[in-house]
Image (tube, rainbow, N blue to C red; front, side, top):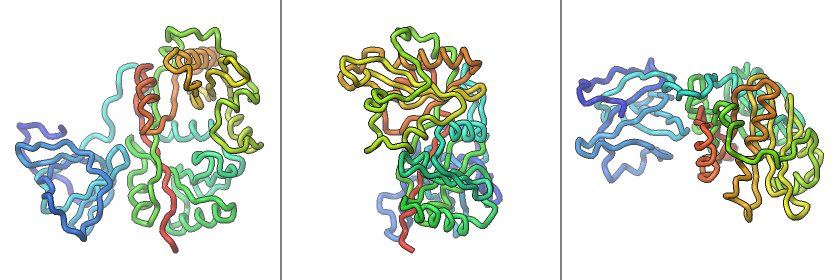
Length: 351
């Protein structure tokens, strides 16, 4: 709860606070909401049923026509009519970080993670990057906003749509929420312009040494610089492993591939790590479904972490889709905590 029981209810926010992180208390929505009210994706709220109130915490992305729109850490939007407000205040932009978790800015992680998964072709649009790799993964086939596009947003989005249409690819924009400096307002503006949020993922960070110290049989993991056919057979996140797949997977400052041999020519487990300064990004950790819960993922993680530590890295990051409960539990147990979320928006409104 952002409001204490001793705190005097008072609305201390105004439209001038758009763009800031706020906490508001409102009267709970009645069961029968008017049909002409905009549909909210999810309120993601904590109810105070005894008082008939709900609390909402997030970035105030707009305040127009007597309605506040608040974007949660998860990227979900909440519509709050002004008359329902009971209290509101500006709150710190980010919670205190956990002990043992490295300090990191969104800007730093956005650049590091983009260098670890590079497209086949790219083009600058101001401080945005248009990326394409023949459709292999959304991360390599989406516009990445890293600042100001240099032109009005509507013009920039038109350029994005045209650029991907020339390549016969769907137009995606990758945008983030949930940390200081993330892009809640951009996410709200994309939704207003007909861009649909189709998938979300967490970017988690943690200390590298604690991963290297895992009680796991890392000695059975083979580490190589090159990408071989058995590794690709286990990865299986493409239809045809053409040169564009190899180029994306092989991209990055210092790339390592991990393999645990299986009983056939397909490995029992694989992983990939990109070392970039103090950061080690771990991705593509996959295990044979028949051999899960045998410590193979931990062995891959430990082996990659130890190699990254040898190269001078001290912190680790990884990405996991929000709905992948097994992976989230695994990484939580290794000390990884959510830094921010990123979302892929696809243009869906017919012109």
